[in-house]
Length: 325
Image (cartoon, rainbow, N blue to C red; front, side, top):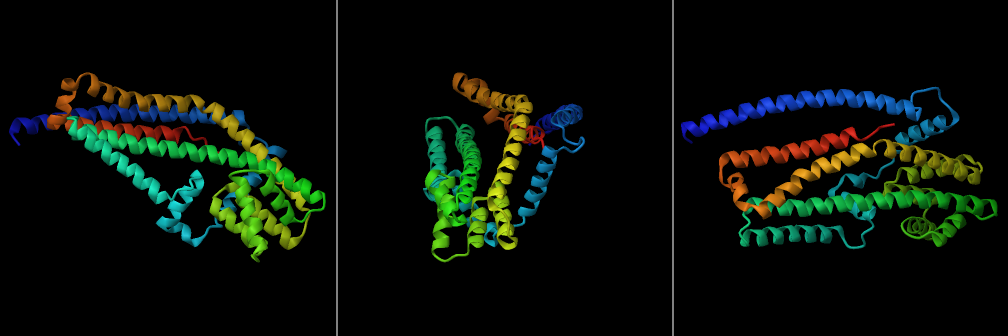
């Protein structure tokens, strides 16, 4: 490395440090403003004010949710169990190993095709990373949609179970009725509970097992409540109605939060997608203009810093846009 190249690197690092310092100061100011807006949002939601009946129900639900987090199976810590959890949350019937191998194979093929067509190593890596990132985004959206459908079906299931219990059906019969009336994904869950109980497993153990398998907070709360009621005695139909009212209140609050944070979510998506889209467009429209980024040391340094900045910005905006209540 010559002296001039060393001086250029020092200059770039100095300029980057200055720009990063200014950017960090702006982030600090932005965080201060975000905290102020967060307090205003919490005030609008009624959080932290005098406790009402609805807020008391939500507080009890949150406390129970924290307590039920401790009910976990030991095998969840293994990598195989995490992959199985991912497959269950997404609703895929194909083994998760097959899905991952398919995505990795598609990324490798895209890299090879890009490199053979003269796109270069950097562009090939970018396309491969884009394929993996797109698959991850699709997976997260699928999990979110399935979880929302599960919550909606669970509300209907609680109503069906309460009416069945009041009509004289046993608890297992109510679960069987739910499995027959409601489809995927909740119907299969209650069908497994009914089948395992028919094979001789204790009902409480079967419910707790399915709650740990589905990793759903509401089902864990349901499992804990049913287990307490079965041990101590009580009106199970009223329990179903109480759980349904708590879930409805939580869903209403979640919808209000999503409305209040919709602008931040949209800004996050636009600010993250703009540099990525422009980067690929410039590579297609004017490859000569982008060549210095791949052939020079300074260009590679700029690409690396840009990639890290985009990832850090995505992480930071994702953390800011989450309203914890």
